[in-house]
Image (tube, rainbow, N blue to C red; front, side, top):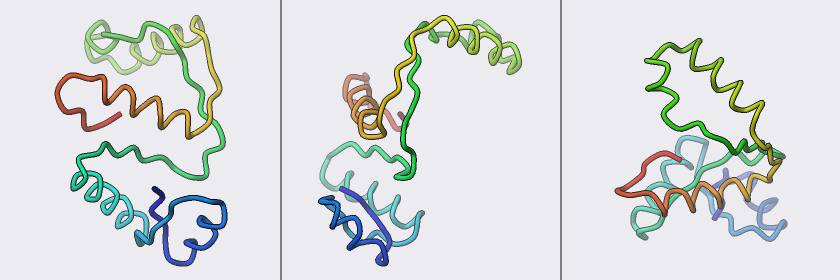
Length: 113
């Protein structure tokens, strides 16, 4: 479901999307979260103007602990890990599906993806 401003509603529906009026950005995000909570569903929020995402598969686990909170060291290690990993270019829809799958697979109740 897409939460959009009233002026954009018909454009989204013309694309075949399930769009509803959500208001301006913050109101639309909050409405999406409230609707998802009421239905017991996960809510993945992405910008609709991104045309691709880059996903790096590699070992990024425990990087914060290994760098002891040193931001510049952590950025350097993350860049090194990214250079040595496989990169996939994916659509925003694929990114949302991936985030949703990760959230569903996580233990507890994940809040951020």
